[in-house]
Length: 489
Image (cartoon, rainbow, N blue to C red; front, top):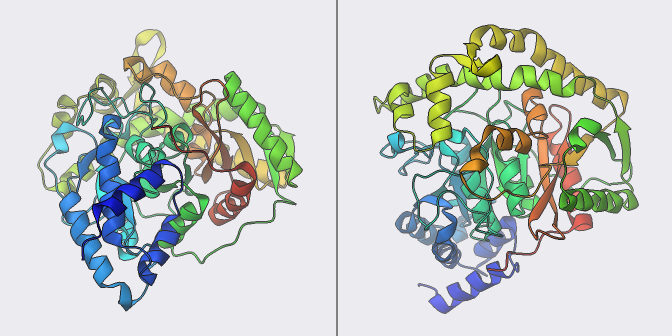
C-alpha cells in the first residue's frame, strides 16, 4: 500500500534538518518493516525536485525508481541485503542499464547502455535503488562543475548545496551537491585528480578515492586508465565503508583505535590556505591530537616537481586512446572529433580540440609540444619515482597517512572563471599528487568556515592498498570531528 505523502514530507523535512540515518540503517529498517523503500525513494525524489536550482541531476528516474522501491518492499521477507531499498545516485559517466549515460556532454545524450558498469551493478545487487544520474563537469575534465548543458535550474552549472552562488566542485559535482542537500545519503562518483574528494570537501560529505585498480573500470566514460577510478561518496563514514565493502567484497571493519595512528604533514600540501581553511584544519588536528593521534612533520623532496611531470602528460595522452576505445564500445558511431565539436563547455572543447585530439601538451610561450615524449618519460621515470617517494615516506616515518586540507580554499564563486586553468590548478593542489601515485585518499568533512559558512574538508592519503585501514581511521575520526550540519535550505 502506498505510504501517505505526509510521511514523505516529514522525511524530506527530517533530511533537510540533518536528522538522517545512514544508508545501512535505512536498509535494516526497510528489511525489518520499520520503513518503506517506496517512502524513502519518494522522499528522495521530492527533495531532488525541491533543490532543482542546484542542477544536481541530468536524469531523475522517478518512474523506474518507484517501481524498484515497490519490488524492494515486496521482497523484504526474502532476506536483507546491505542496501536493501535504499535510494542512491550515480554520476552520469558511470553506466546504469536503461538510463542515459551522457558523461555530461551533449553528443552522448542519446546513449542508453544495456548493462550496468560493474561498480553500479555491485550496489544494485546489494539492493540499492538508483534514483537518477548526477550532473558533472563535462567529460569529467575539470573541477568546477560549471557545465552549461543539462540545466534544471536557472543558473549555469552544478551549484553548492550550502550556497547556490558557489561551485559544487567537480568533476563528481552533482553527487556532491545531492549529498550536501540531503537528497540521498550515498552515491557514486569518479576520481582522476580529485573528483570525488573535491565535491565532498565543498559540500560536506565524505569520500574515498580507492587505490587505482581496486575497483573495476569497465562501463565508465574514461580520461586515463592509469589514473581513473570510481569512488564512494556519502554523508557518513559508515556509508563510505559500506559502499566500499560492497564494491570490493572486503569484510566489515571496525573503527581503528586513534591512539597509535601516525599522520604526516608535508609543507607543500599546506600552502595557499585561506583563513577559514587554516583555522578549521588547525582545530581538527588539535582535536585529533587530543584523541591520541600523533602528527609529525615530514619532508617529501621534489613532490610537486614529480607530480607535475606526471599529471598532465598522463591524462592528456591517455585521454585520446581511452576515449576512442570507449566510444567504439557504445555502438553510437560517435567519433572523438564529433564529441569535442558538440561539447558545451568552452574549457572542455578547447582541451579536446587543442590538446587531446592532436596529442599535444602546453609548451612555453603559449606553444604546444608533442605529448608522447612527456608521456613516455612520465610512465618510465617520473611516476615510478613519485610512487617510490610516497612509499619511502610512509615507511621511514611509520605513517598511516599524510594529512592535509583537501582543498586549500573554500568553494569558489560559480562563474566562467571557476573553470580557468589557474583555478583548476589551485583546487587540485593537494588532491593531484596522490592520484598520480595511485594511492588511496579519504576526504572527511571537518567544519563550516567561520566566515564563509562553507564546508571544509581534510584528506588522508595512505599507502597503496591501505584503503580499509584508511576507512577504519576515518570511522574513528568522525565522532571526534563531528558531521556537518545540513545546509539552511
